[in-house]
Length: 256
Ligand SMILES: NC(=O)c1ccc[n+]([C@@H]2O[C@H](COP(=O)([O-])OP(=O)(O)OC[C@H]3O[C@@H](n4cnc5c(N)ncnc54)[C@H](OP(=O)(O)O)[C@@H]3O)[C@@H](O)[C@H]2O)c1
Image (cartoon, rainbow, N blue to C red):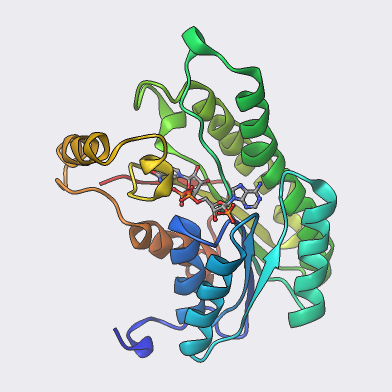
């Protein structure tokens, strides 16, 4: 698809996308670049995959840099913001996409897995927002978009109880940060995806189990197909753009 097919709503803007080496984060990074943003492609472990995303964005004629940081670590999130400023001079958009899921419920509760999910899914959002705030406050503008989940809306799927609890925390952080940061011209919104085909849903499943799951899930929404990362990236691009300038504290569901 030619680059000029996309509205270029983010020309001149600088975006950080956490967890952008694959899956939904990758699609968001590419989409924001197609709309004209320079993108900091954050990753935790997969350097080669992140460099591939950077290459894809540069091939589109846009700017990008891969930045390693574990957002569960506050100092690392701070370095990610500092390196973005050093490279691009400003930060207009932060997409808190990095997230992990361990399937579990109260019958097989695992303390370590719960702690890891809290550290990344909740801590990562808090650390990254704190890291970009000085720049956004100084600019008197900014768009923050968090990745929530329909898991936090109720009883979506068995085995995601504690993951859902971390995403419920993302929902309230979205609303509270919107309240705290509105006077600085900063909007904070979230997208709650339904079932999107990525490594996250494939993890821990055999190819046969995955195939069965994909077939089942595709019948469980009104559109009769599973979600793609690009289905979420387009909603994030809207919330990151001036088209959503008068929206804040909102959680938009995109689940077919
Ligand atoms: N897939 C779904 O059905 C679905 C539904 C609802 C919500 N979501 C949410 O959407 C977001 C993306 O999900 P996905 O399905 O694309 O996941 P994924 O395919 O598992 O990719 C996760 C990404 O997050 C990065 N990451 C993980 N922990 C990190 C950390 N501590 N610091 C920095 N980066 C980290 C990974 O980086 P490395 O590979 O470099 O380690 C990877 O790029 C998550 O927040 C997830 O909870 C997904």
